[in-house]
Amino acid sequence: MIKALLMVTSISLGNVDTVLPSMKDCMEARDAIIQQDAETKVLCVPYTMEQSKSDDMRDMFSVFMDMIVQLKSYEENYGNLGKEDRQCEPCSE
Image (cartoon, rainbow, N blue to C red):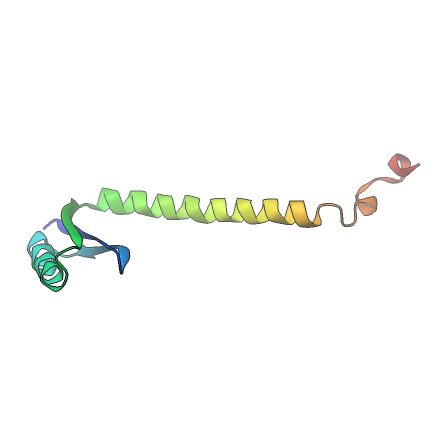
């Protein structure tokens, strides 16, 4: 059975994505959400394991990019500390 991705967009909640075990479960959840707030946009789409693999890759690259941004910040803030210690003896003469 194919899983379903429930995508909810609301002013009060923002964006919420939830994987449900079946399209039927997704449609039932969709109906319950719409009954609570008719202005909320709710969508059910088929969700496969290939999508979850791409989600895993996106998460990995997100962590990697966060690490790069943090390293860049350290370089900008602390790049001059210990600069003399990084040079070899003949270079400092």
